[in-house]
Length: 144
Length: 261
Image (cartoon, rainbow over all chains, first blue to last red):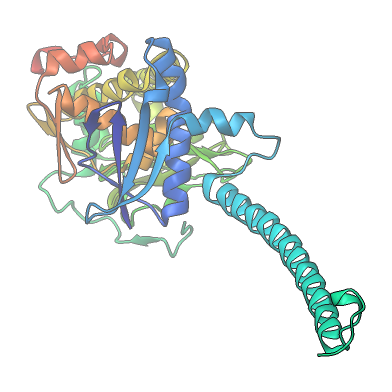
């Protein structure tokens, strides 16, 4: 598979007209990540801001498959040990989000169930009250 | 990577398909770094050599081998390389026709690195015995081979300087300058245009860069109007500019006849 590593520098766009043959998108991402990491030091040395840059990994049809902002290199260093590549990281993030969401949803369902239970109980009470002969409703006066 | 008898299909001592014999190529190479007398040329011409075809990405020598012949590259492209613990490859030199990448093992019995082809190649295998016989008979020729290995050392030093101190842009430009001059020395280039069967991965592994960094650097060098890359051909559009970009001073290649450039 041939991948193209276009470079965006702020508003400037520098297309990759050569491309690179790589086995899959994961490797393409890792290669771009390694390049970005090495380019950071070169850019800093020439007093150029790496944060303005990003790689756009595209296929031969020109479809952008993945965007790698150079700031991800910095973010990866801020993560706790055992830095993970982007996709794995985002998969984990997604999993974590789903888990939290499920839990939250569970709480909500429980709360909703409790609410339903309360409503049901109060409705039963109301029904019981309605079914019972009217007693003290009109101040003890009997008769329909 | 394939290795052993299966990988190297031996075609025996046939003449080269081009009109040049292995000895003629070797003479041309030696004359690019020194002078040869008529009798020395004759002695070189008598060297026995077995011509062998090598598929691309085939190990010719592997670490730990005890070679019994030296390999003269006739056609194609070779490199020396080592693998580090995590499996990454470091290419330590590139070799073009006329080079003898495993010459060190004529005197160092055990191979301490690998030699492999990067493109479909033709090589001539010259038995160590024949080489040693030639050196006894023609000590001045031995001096010329010695000179060749010293130039090899100079190239290593230049690469070390590049990997240690130069930017990716300078490193890649320098490598291109070096390959062009070396190919010109054995008449493998027309003007500043050479056949370069290297992949971006090969360049990355040689210069200690990642492939995408090499890819980016190639566009930069191209964007600066210094080179053109077309179907495995490298053309220096602005030779002076490329030399400047690569901080390239060709003294370390110690070419005998620089007027050809």
